[in-house]
Amino acid sequence: MTRRIGLAACQMGPVQSGTSRAEVVGRLIAMLERAAAGGAALAVFPELAFSTFFPRSEIADETLLDSFYEDGFPNVETAPLLYAARRLNIGFAIGFAELIRDGGEARRFNSMALVDRSGTLRGLYRKIHVPGSEAPEPGVTVHLERRYFAPGDLGFPVFDLDGVRVGLALCNDRRWPETYRMLCLNGAEVVLIGYNTPLYLDEAPALAHLRMFHNHLPMQAGAYQNTLWVAAAAKAGLEDGQALIGGSCIIAPSGEMAALAISLQDEVIVHCADLDLIAACRRVNFDFARYRRPDQYRRIAEA
Ligand code: CDT
Image (tube, rainbow, N blue to C red; front, side, top):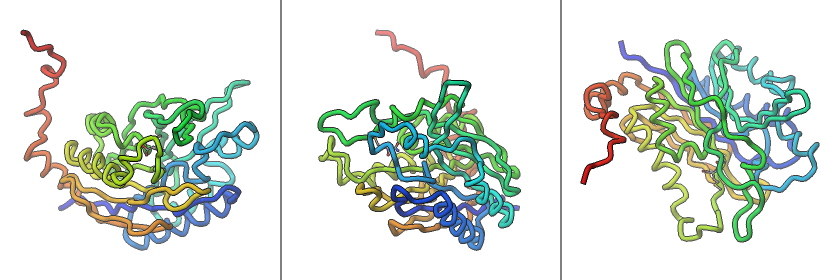
């Protein structure tokens, strides 16, 4: 019998500053309901889904900064999303700003939580490739992720969800081949990605027209070269004056686009993913045990 799983990418329109957690969580639950009604068993939401993409701003006020983070996940404000997962019998992954207080010390990560169909938190991923800078730089779009987040310290974990092996990644991670290769080597069959990508980064105007191409290119290549299903959810549209790209998608292990969002708003796309396609694609080119040659990869050629 063919192994299948219904995957959903839940793209979010903008979340303007000042929007309450309750309002955002209400939107997320409405999307989870649409995903479940469409036959999905597993959904992905964007990176930093509960707030505006705050790394676009320099925030000096510590209390204001802290308000963008979750002091524990789930918490009182986000728990309704987990209750909805249980009611709808659907798992999900969601990006959030994670604040850990160890005594007097605060640790901050750009994180993603994975919740199963019973509404139970199954694990966390912390973004490894943290882009941008620690301080604003002249002539460069402000992007202060490196001030607000430490690099992830949990590696690339893979979780077993009802027999399906699921890995997680966040935004800039999707541009790096290591992300997919490590998740593949760790046994992933499905990779869930959340992202916030500005349409304009004025340090590279010559590349502006390639923003969507450079969004899909690495995800399609990563899916193909590692024979994975990829489901990716964007935060899209004009958010606090900054345009974010959409292009949320579900990609097959063949590298083909199986489903693609067409708006810059809250939008749910669903695809019934054939997991047997992984083995079929693997047999053609990517039978690692048979063809991959890691013993040769670090060899320096002799003159
Ligand atoms: N959120 C995130 O990682 N965004 C980056 C763009 C900013 S790079 C300064 C991305 O890779 O989409």
